[in-house]
Length: 541
Ligand code: KIV
Ligand code: ZN
Image (cartoon, rainbow, N blue to C red; front, side, top):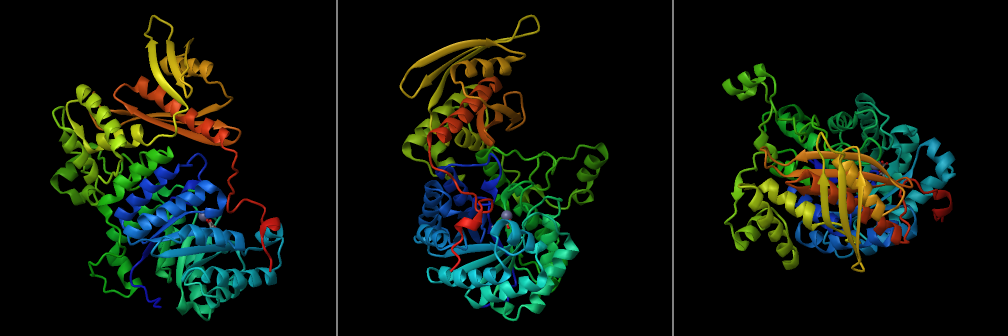
């Protein structure tokens, strides 16, 4: 194998670490939709999940392996702790993929050894050798991570990495698990690994990092300068706590500043060859898809994909941009696919044109889903003259790919104004076909609707987020509502879109309740790869 990588490998972990974000849990179909979009985006590796976590997680990884893993050219990866049961589950789920990778990990910092693993350094070394070799008995491509590497004793880290590579790991990933390190420290750690791990030339150095101090992207860029060639990142930077390093920020930093980074990859500074395989024109679309499906909104001032990232509000800036874009713009919005909002369809467009456009946008829907989406489209076209690609994406993402409908919103009606008390009436149909109607008064129309729904579907919960965004400009724009509910420490998101934001608000609430009830009904426990007490779980051979 060659480890003289002269380009950067993009390893996307949106579906694994990203999905570990509180409230970001997504169902199997949504995971598959995201995986297909990641494939179009051009990531090299898709970490599809942690198969041992639950039957649902196993099935999602398996489905991605047998679809995207056969068609897309991506390596499909599954996470496994260093236990035989985890590794076997990952191997089984990944079997259909043409290129399969098992990513196995064990903590190496003294604090994790003492309190989480309750293992000695010698035991961790032995487990590393044995479990990497075990993973290698199933797949050629094994990645190893020493969890909490950034807080580990470098000398011990070198020994663990040497063992992992000797046992067959082709990629060694260095995680800053708690987002603690700084760019120069992380760069020095990567350099130390290059200089002190005797067999490092047989492996690719990867980095993984969390954004607790807002330094993840900066840490990764410094790591590249010191020899890292794979970046583990997520769309919109979602992930545990403050999230992971954001894929779009890393890719665009490497693209916009390639003359600066080229020499670190052994290229002449003026080389125009891309540093990654990413098709940047898919970045914005992927960001919107992940945001919708996870219910995790993108802050307006977020780099690259925030609503304001390419908006020039100040007069001076606008004047400068009109005279010469480069006065205030370091990249063109087209580069990330931001101008893809032209009018595409209207009231008279037929089913065929509609279906073709959805295909071009990358949606693969069943006949039943197309019928459902087409009805929504016609309904929207009656209210809104010009339908854009963004409207179409909104229809599909919000109306078609929804959780199982235990409760269906049949009717919502409000009366409000400055002289009346906001009052709402709702009718909900249950799975058994029963129609339940109730009414309530609230502080505003949405509050009244939610109180009325609570009278029908009652489970203790806190509404922790409510937000409305418009899809396109104009008074007839679709409004997208995202809400998040918390029940017993878990967060459930609901999402809906409609030209009437009151209806969208009601639908988003019912969607979140459907998710919550589905979770309550399923009795399978989901294991968190990093938080479960490994002391009892690890098979110390
Ligand atoms: O943050 C971390 O250490 C991880 C590992 C499992 C790679 O996510
Ligand atoms: Zn992580």
